[in-house]
Amino acid sequence: MPVNSFDDYPMSWKPVLDKESNTPLYIELADILKTDILEGRLTPGTKLPPQRELADYLDIHLSTITRAFKLCEQRGLICSVVGRGTFISSDAAALGMLPLHQALDKVIEMGAILPDPDIELQVTDYLKEITNEPDFYKLLQYAPPTYDSLLIKAAVKWFSYYGVASSRDNILFSSGSQNAIYAILSALFQPGDKIATSYVTYPGLKVAANSLGIQVIPLPLFDSTITAKSLDYVVKNHDVKGFYLIPDFNNPSSELMNTNTRKEIAAFYTERKIPFIEDCIYSLFIPKPLPPISSYAPEYGIVIGSTSKILSPGLRLAVIHTPVQYYSQISNTLYSIIITPPALMMQLFARIVNNGRFDRIRELKIKDVEQRNKLFDSLCKDIQSTGNKHCPIRWISLSSKKNLNPSEAEEDLLNKGIQVFSAPRFVVGNSEIPKAIRISLISEHNTESYKKGLMLLNDYISQL
Image (cartoon, rainbow, N blue to C red; front, side, top):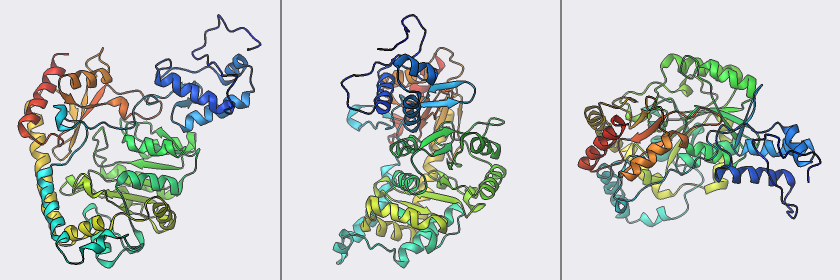
């Protein structure tokens, strides 16, 4: 029992330790905190007691509390704010996985981003060509540890679409962008390191970082956007070791970073010699993408060019352009995780790109996104959102609905038969949770169902 009496003392968290537990005390405390968050006893934004006060309450050494808080930071559960204290992270209770409803659920899918299967039938046709070849069986073996000239040629051409000059010395393949993110984080950062990203970001980044003990912290906004000043702030105040950015249609907020900001950020990376991950997941939906940040900082930028949204998610393939200085580390980590992606998938990718077939697929996908944006603009006139005609997602503001919680909006819409994703799924660290939801424009492939979903969405928001 604690020596001092805290019965009437106001404390936001009074953990109860298990005297019979053999778990190290600091780990037990961190586990209790996680349980209290998941079960709703601690909510995002709650200020925790000062470490000395908590140590006094539990009658344990201050260093044990410090270790427990450090572990909780690495798990993404808490955030320390200089001069203000320690708080439960805004995303501490958020689910890392984005659920996908099947057709049998009778839900109009506007949450997960699912490319049109009709367009992907062309990919199926190309696959059939390969399976009919006499030496097809060779592609069911392990892929060689080195890439052949046709695969390198395809990868170089692939990055040319983004505006990145690549070569054999820069190219690696992974089994999708999530695999790439995990491998890069594992190769270049250590448990306890911090990386920074937008205040709302792709949840898969947080899942990967959390599993590696890497803390993800939000970049502050200056003039309502991320700038080189944002990066400088987190390096000076949080000792950040790297960055993750989606400059083309940030997921979920859909911002498109302008050229001047890209150049300023690239100059910062080059001056500070800091590695950064540039996820170009939506870049190729833009007919003429802006030059990526990495094109201005080639020694430090690692580009992920996934095929999942613009070509086919079933390929489970992403192409990585890495500076030579990181090549061996990332290559070795990828090998330790997957050895190599499937030979069949890499061969299919090489043929589609080298034969010019990808140009037609991309053209169809760009046209599909443009048409779906037109329908959104015509049927959702009561909705305030960000995104443009080439963006496959929309970030819908609920800020005028003062009493509405974004998570409640997600639940309400699901009850009406529409799947969307709310801001808490994407928020980072101690950021204020935006009153917003994200919708995908390309997931509901039946045009009439898509229109119905948009009308239901517009009616719901307009009547709040």
